Length: 278
Image 1 (cartoon, rainbow, N blue to C red):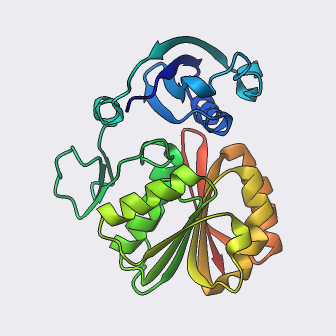
Image 2 (tube, rainbow, N blue to C red):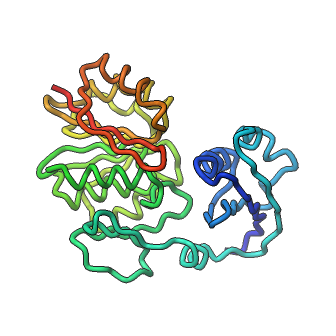
């Protein structure tokens, strides 16, 4: 990569959830890649796209609940593979599912998912992705039709395929995530996953047995009705991307459309809810 980049090294206290919010906002501002570390995150943007006011619209920097400082430096070249190799560690979920990069050794668990995250969200490290994988472990997906909404790296769609889902669709509004999901589906030989770039407006005349939506609170509240309209009888919805304090609001909206809460998982104040549609 011959382009000159600028690296913003952010120190974040407390690290979560501020780092996750910061990455999302920086991505919208034009930053291309992110490497999380113990103190926060380093964000990279091409020098030609960097501006003196680039951080003015990053609202989390103005939140008094977090302390966020940064230093910046110009970098002539960035070897992204080397950066990921240094910072992306493999993980295991319930001693059944391994999530790793191509350069990690296969630990020989029942399910092995290989992803190269680039700048997309969903490595399995974040609490919401981890809990979604836990939900999916317990579900019988044999011959089911599945939607992964806000697919990020495609990790949840790939796991659904490994668990026997008949057909899977994965959707993300972000072009990076769309392309990354395509690459990761091919990497895991999941040829029956269809990946699309877009939002819930694509869900016209669609029907699924399971909808996975790991997005954020406001989008979920807006789209729950659309999800329910796409569910087959006895279908299920897995929701995540919000905090414990949001459960009442999410559940109130879900109940309006006939969703029945069956199970809730919590990890570091993040929550994942399993609903059934009768």
